[in-house]
Length: 206
Ligand SMILES: [Zn+2]
Ligand SMILES: [Zn+2]
Image: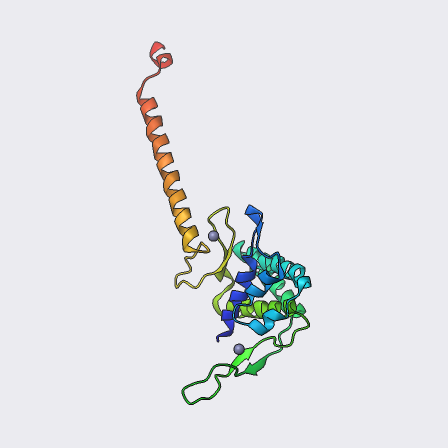
């Protein structure tokens, strides 16, 4: 597993909240556990106290994406660095579950197998993954969806750095909105020129 792919942990956590719509799905231990995906062992460690702790890490991760989206690279890096300091990784090589054709373990890195609590483990993985992504691909690869009111976080992995939306759904929604706005503008413009073609009485009288 490439370490930068752990940056999905950061995106997944940030997107449990939609501030503009006042929506928040991170309201229970179960919701916290779901974020761990396949890492069942780590997920089981989560307790009620982690809900609040996860939310606080989420706000700080969102701030990193916001700074990057504003083009403030130094701020984004400073914010991420402080998360890295606070939630350090404790790397271990692991070979569980997976075997190659010859039955040898598929050795891979685990970043936080023995954290003090579930939040510390998750935050360490998310921050490290995001740091690898940022240094490997660029700060401008971190973005927030432009299809208002959505402000979901995304990582741009397109070859020409053209990504602007969190999902296909938002891209479609933005395209439809842009099309409607164009149509409205056109209608207004033709309306106006029709008015202009009609000489007003005030002008002809003079
Ligand atoms: Zn593993
Ligand atoms: Zn979106």
